[in-house]
Image 1 (cartoon, rainbow, N blue to C red):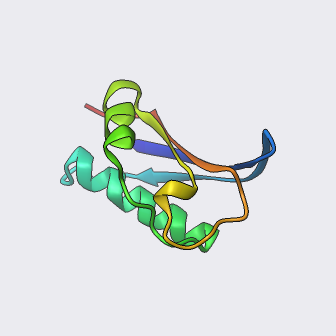
Image 2 (cartoon, rainbow, N blue to C red):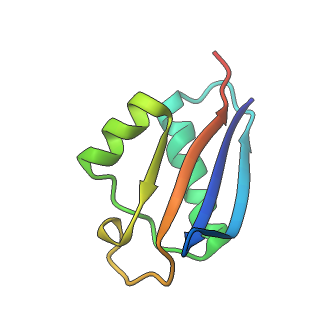
Length: 90
């Protein structure tokens, strides 16, 4: 199972969170990550963030990244969206 935890943070407080579980073993890791991000954005009613180079590097190194206002075209009413892998199948 592949699980991603998404958290919306504002003023160092957790506003919303959601866990996405993907059990499709035929998908690549990259497709699972994008599918989880799509589901999180749908659940939180957000536009999809843009992956900047810093986000890609953080995610590759730590399996975690933060999407701030710089990643969204529309304005957001929170500080950042924390996106983290919490369980991964190999």
